[in-house]
Length: 353
Image 1 (cartoon, one colour):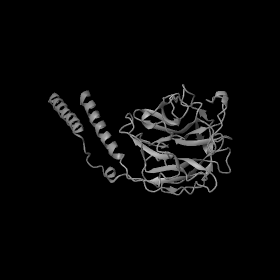
Image 2 (tube, rainbow, N blue to C red):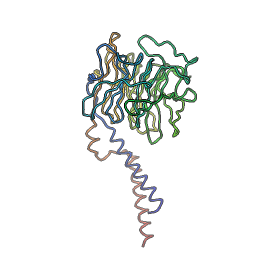
Image 3 (cartoon, rainbow, N blue to C red):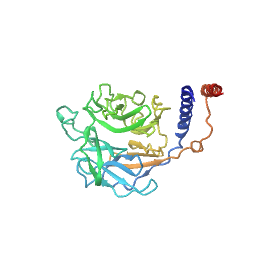
Image 4 (cartoon, one colour):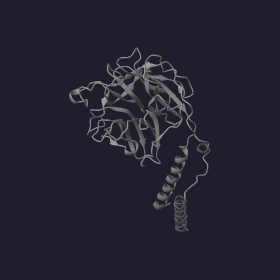
């Protein structure tokens, strides 16, 4: 087979794979959410929920008793995705500190991204002193990375770097979300500390092969002059959920895109009134397969906050892998690719005669 035929075969394979990917991302509607009883408590605040990539652990932030600081990172684990959650465990120091530790984000390989208001030598706060937190909220924090070792041990957390040489600022960073795509590895988060921030906005940094992280770039199609915060991107990079008060209440919004290099669609508020209530819904996150949506909720000012989960199924059409319906331009492109393949095949056959 000639090199041209190899390239053509690769182009057709890529084209076909892209079609399959598009159909694989079809889902049904979200069902009504249920409280996650294994992690919620009656008197303390639980929020910032997110599953581990394998779905066997659920991480949250809580100010319940038994912690090390003002707000700590906790998790529950289960033996299988269908199994029951076990007992909540506090992550040991130095993952937790005497200060506010929140927005945990487990990543493949035992890594854990999180936000902390702890004071370190590489803080992004002028004078290493974070501003006074508003009532009921954590102090402004930076994004850190730690790694888990044996028996719930953690490496010394590393600050990801200060603007303009990293994603952190003197403001508030929330909800790191790491996604690996064909276009590269990216870190999504929200911040109000950038020169172009209009309150909390959604930003994206690039993660280089050496582990360094660039300063964030404001994602214009997801950000407004309202409070747009705490993004989480699905593992394939094609769907993002976040919290926003753009319609007056802090609710869960969703946007999608055709591929990891495309712009996001206009964000839509999830219409299910059992998900977006009259209360405040924050830090939504998606399981790796996109079938579970977690979020925190405060029903009113007196409610400390609990964690909820809603589920959806893959659409029947996606599971059945039907023949795709193509637009006229896409049909023309496929026909051109196939015709070219046939022409090259005839030329190659003639060469062997």
